[in-house]
Length: 178
Image: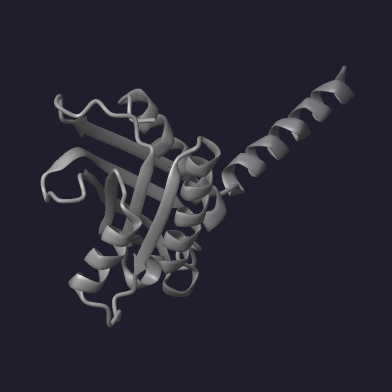
């Protein structure tokens, strides 16, 4: 009986240590859709503007998000804008126009969260961010759908990207867009 209690105690301590030392990954999203927009997305152009320290997240997010949309039959193209990009707004507008999307998704990072020693944006200690996401019709600057996506991951970029993409895709499904 004493041996079983000791084994249970050790198992409990090990489980606590595993949970306490494992990284935390969270992501949440809220959205608002225009009642006038009831189309299913078939062709999307993604534009991401993120902070310098979140470049790794942006490229990984873009890759996973576009792969997920492609698996659902949605045709995509993208541009991840570097803070030092030399392209003009006209260059970007021309790229979008040449692609001919049904909608343009613009994802702007509005906030960065930094915890020293964390790995979300490895080289700059960015562990999280908030992104303002808008769906626009190609010739309009008025959003037909808007979302706020929070992403946090102190255990690595892959987990934060996976959870954020899952949440965004789930929200797009809930809102009847995909």
